[in-house]
Image 1: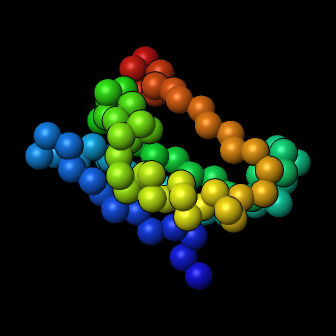
Image 2 (image 1 turned 90 degrees about the horizontal axis):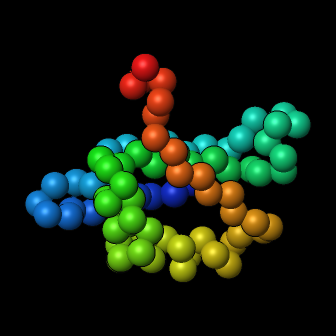
Length: 85
């Protein structure tokens, strides 16, 4: 069974989601009970903000996923500082 199907939406005639990776977590104490991990990479912070607040596909995904969710969702925003070094 597929974990999720993502539609790459278009903003200003360019895809604003660079990549999406998703999968079930491996059995490990560091997962703190989370069973699914998703990493979504955006071109920039503006694109992430658009996805978070205005993207119709993301709104649909949340409406489908919300009833299936057990527990909290952990979300973290970061910029890659390793590649910048």
